Image 1 (spheres, rainbow, N blue to C red):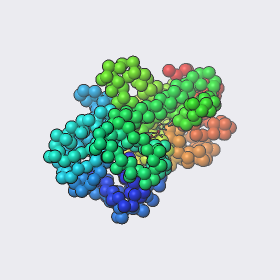
Image 2: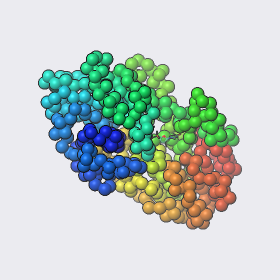
Image 3: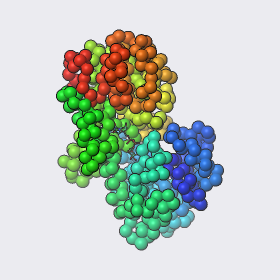
Image 4: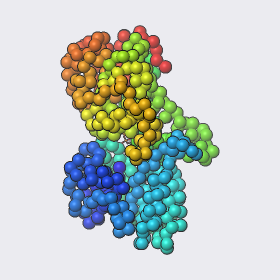
Length: 470
Ligand code: UGA
């Protein structure tokens, strides 16, 4: 999130010098090369326009922090894996060391901007670290959460629904807010720049993600009921979404939501509710994560139960591993849970994703929970490593050759235009399609001869006769 945000800022503010710093040399080298460290449509174009002019990438973190007027901090805030709040609370280790470093190297007043999503009142802790180590320098803390989504980052940055800036209610705090507002005002209409107090800005970010995830869990809970009753979740979502108070977006039933933020932010919200003595509020949000877990497992169970209750030794093609299309990001992707479940049932997986590298897939399938948010050298890989049951291939036809079933787990556009007749001819029979994203044309596929399961859609007769899945 830091790289694309700062690249767009550099493009829109030619008179401001922007330096993206990172302690990882390979990552900075990648930013300075033709192959950027992340895949994001339109990003390369933005970087090429400004790199070397007013946009620079460097590992000399201290020098550039020393020289800057505004420091945006965009470090990881993983879910704690051990100790107090394990599995829920955010681990602020990286944030704290960034704050200490800023205090150490600064010789002039600075505005420090929280860009990464943090638990409410983190700014207060950061402020304390900075002021207790400040040697008389004045630091102003602002919270400026980012709302961009992956895959559409550049578009979202060009045209944000809103920019949110939280700061202290003092004269110095308001001055800092204005300074940051002036930066965004280069391209965002001022009426879309919302200024609040620090805590509101921090909480709004967690709340926005929780609300979005809650919509998906709501429609996914509905998808299970649709399958049981013969309703069609797409029709239900459309009918519901035309109510202008509800709106049509974010109502696509799926195999589950993934990504680096939704689950982490909700777990964090739950923890904050619990710490504030609000168990009922915590339980409400817990259910959003539970339904998401249920949906992923429900999908995997559907695969197993449809294939005579066993996938042992059967080849299953996995089409799509990224947590959504147009990104190579696999953090918390539902594919991890689905694949692990099928591997546990002794299936042989053949995985294809247009953007995700084999090494990443293998790492994801053998990593401990929540470890993805730590630097690679700190990630714990299970001793037994990745199972020999998993094969990663470079196209959909190879993945599906001789397979008993195929699962669509990411809605990549190219999956819509595959030659399914050719795929069918090369698969074992009966040939199953399990569409976790509702992207394939089920009617056409049934005509070809496939048995098709589409999430939340009326079941075809084969699936109806199979044991119900819990
Ligand atoms: C999300 C939010 O949308 C951004 O506003 C926020 O800034 C970002 O998290 C963040 O906090 O960094 P992102 O995780 O990139 O963005 O992706 P989304 O488009 O929100 O999708 C999240 C997951 O929900 C994906 O797995 C997607 O496939 C799934 N999804 C989305 C559905 O299953 N159904 C839908 O209708 C929409």
